[in-house]
Image: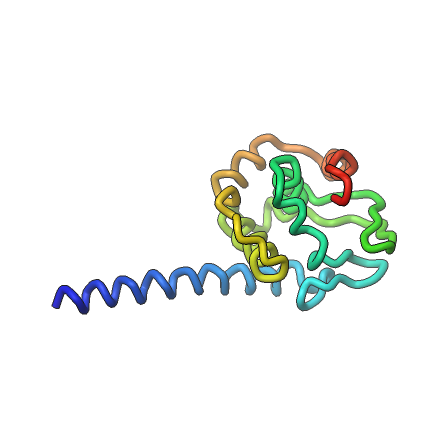
Length: 151
């Protein structure tokens, strides 16, 4: 009996991880995919590709703050990604998505597309702290300009 209980708990734990990933994928499809496209490959001139570009920001604290701020505040201004210039307005998802949902979307993109293994820093609590710190889309754009080279 005890073996079946432990086996059931292990199965639930394994499914829970898969469901969290599926939630991030569903949220990406519902909120991000229209601009960033399936597979996060971007739409030239409209929205930059996330795949192949944002994983490097997860390597340091400043980049991590930037990733969370983009999701929370959005961003206005011109950026160049892979030699293509994008001038537009990334909307804020602070009202539409909770901290847990934003963490799930970021985890989906970083783990699924960018293969970032260390995501221990990406928690709803970190998103809440970043949300509480506030900021504007223009400030997030300036923050991007201060990221380490290659970011």
